[in-house]
Image (cartoon, rainbow, N blue to C red; front, side):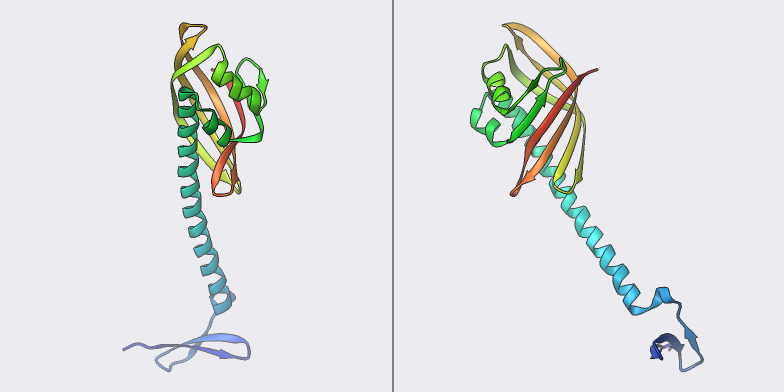
Length: 172
C-alpha cells in the first residue's frame, strides 16, 4: 500500500511517499494556494448558476411584457418598466414611461401577437441585455399590419425581479 504524507518544514511543504525521500512541492501546490483556487472555482460555479436563473427570469419578464402589450394591461406594463424608462422606436421616436404606456393602450397600432425570435440574453451584475427580432401582428389605424424589427432591451434588477429600463428598435 502506498501512503502519502504532507509535511511542513520551515514554511516549505514536502510530499513523502512510503517514508521515502521527501519531494519539495512548488508554490502552486501549497495548501493556501489550493484553497484559494478551489474557492474561486466554487464561486464561479455559483455565479454561473445565478446567471442561469436570472436569464430565465428575464426571459419570463419579456414574455410577460409582450403579453401585457397585446392584452393592454396597464398595471403590468407599469409594473414591468422602470420610472426612468426610455423607449426607442425604429422610426426614431423616443418615449418615456407614461408615453410608452399610453401608446400601447391608446396608440394607432394595436397588437394581436408579439413573438421574439433569435433571442439572446446576457447578464452583467444588475443589468440584463436582451437582443432579438421583434415580430408582431396587429392593426395600424384599423388596417392589418405586420412588424419585423431588431430590438435591444436593457433590464435592471430591482428587488427580486427585472424591469425594463431601455428599449431601442431598429429597422432590419
